[in-house]
Image (cartoon, rainbow, N blue to C red; front, side, top):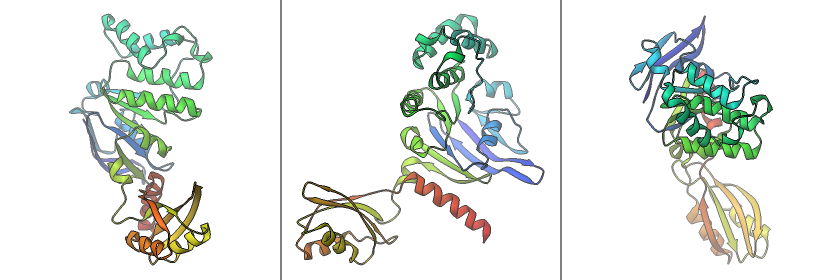
Length: 318
């Protein structure tokens, strides 16, 4: 659906984007991650035709964004971090205006706008001035304008920034509902958002693509078990249960979580690439205790993101 090849954008000697290549499949929701100044916004501005690259290509469903800009842009709906809203228009007036800008055929406008208003749950707000809407509803209007023209690709830049928890959940549900009809690129700093709605992840750092893959591949434990939750019963005290775990070869850290009825629950971390489950079982059994749960815990997306960015920085310094 989207093919990015050797994309580069230079400002003098500074590489804002440095030789990025990435393929985004139809129906995919890509979480586009990176620290501030990594080059995410520059990449999205090139992808949507707002900036031209120094070199490299971007094609949308076979149309090159530079060689066939009109055809490519028709396939894209864009929600910037600050939605381009006209505050003194009503929601309905604004979306009609966007329909005209996007050259939606006159016969299709009313039906299409009615469908969009229903999808983003703005039907009750269509006659209200945009300036009188809450932040959450303004974000919905921003999503609505991106949907006008029924684009195959949606590019959403920080769509939940500044929203309260309830509004964030509502926007995430909306994005999830859109995945059936659209390919979505979601730029965000909220890594829980990626876990909640995305199917794949791309991490950019200092203009370079640092990592890319499915969310499940990113969050799966690497190699042998490194972290797990364990529940122990039959221990005379929390301290004795914790000591039995700490004294096991290969165990690096033991953190008490809580007491659940008569069970002591701990988070256990082993040395990397060391599977200590058998040793832990034997140590607990020798002390006349029993394990009623031992559940592996995958690395969080936050941990993986920090590792990727830190490794990139360390590689440059060496």
